[in-house]
Length: 231
Image 1: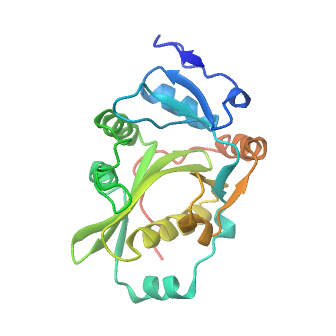
Image 2: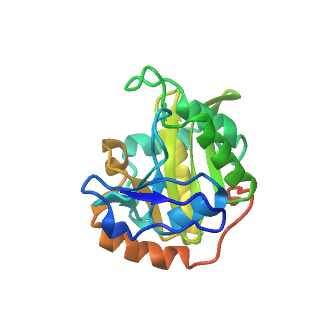
């Protein structure tokens, strides 16, 4: 297994083709912004538990959603049009991460992979204008959202949470529609789930994903705090 250097000037990763069949590519290193951005540019992301070293992944196949192929069900479209929720961008990034790390029905002990170190690392990326959050509000209460990293015309979705029915779905659809308007090429879901498949996500070979990714990250960055375009 390739072990990453902790030298501040060495943020290199091995070729993604050298990952294990499960997608594990490397171990170690750190979560500095320069290393995280280098990882995402090549389709690599950290995912590990609090009692493990940093593990870096590049799965094959890769779950992606092309914004122009977004599919919204009639029932979800009705929910959006009824205005049950207010959706914002970059209003409370750290709070969204903490909520994503909290207990869920499938993980009653909490999302342990979103460690305190991860919260600090991605909050630093947010302050630099590279990481973004989407918040769903109901009666002034934060009830859903997601966060991720943007480079060029690629958005890398990291995690989402929901405390009310359809809250996270509304956040994701609203973001994807904005990304489509901004000419983003690809939304990286990392791994497949019924939730993203229903919205139009598909699994593609890693080789195809890296080809799409190279074209997307070469586009100009939309760096800084985000806001939705006015209707």
